[in-house]
Image 1 (cartoon, rainbow, N blue to C red):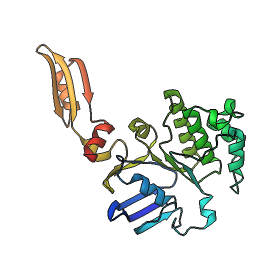
Image 2 (image 1 turned 90 degrees about the vertical axis):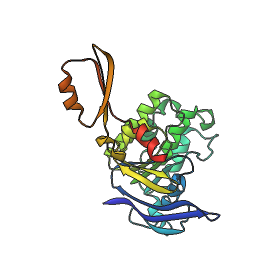
Image 3 (image 1 turned 120 degrees about the vertical axis):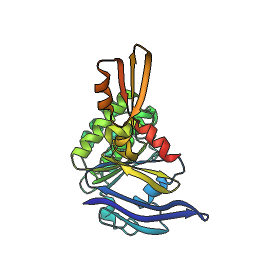
Length: 271
């Protein structure tokens, strides 16, 4: 079953296409990452899926409904964590989460949510006094308190230190393990490798590649760079069969085998 199905999605501004025939399938329960440079059409695509922006053409189904005409009950199954969130500067963390929980028919326990995002010690602190990373955790708390079936995460770890990012990754894995479908947009490719089951790359309003982090753009079939040192000094060779080459070398010193990284493949695709 697909949580999201998109075919020939189109949206233009002033006659210029921002989304130019995007097609996507996001399966229920998976973490799907949407990548692309600024201006590629990611944000417009996601806003259409969220029901926040009208499309010019194409077919879109999200949780079995068209976001443009979906009933109010549909929105209760959607969680959204945007880059810029509602101003809650004078509200404490606990108050904000409790307030948003009242909007949903079957919310999570607010105290549980505060603990899940690592804000228990800041529960009584006003949002305006939180650090940037703590504020993003509050944004995530408000996005998941309604127990969504589908969660949109837009650059969720911006401003996080390395430890906070790892904690957030554990939360995403937990939500996914509980059956939540997650659509993630991020510029952190290590985050994509750590979390995404599949991903798509958007450039100039079109999907230019789709696959798993390991296979995107033929990454798994790309030639490997084998480097080693022998009596003649440092040497290297590109080959599609690194195992055969290594066996022919015997026991060389400083042996390394390197395949293209996800960043290498991504940069080539958007070029």
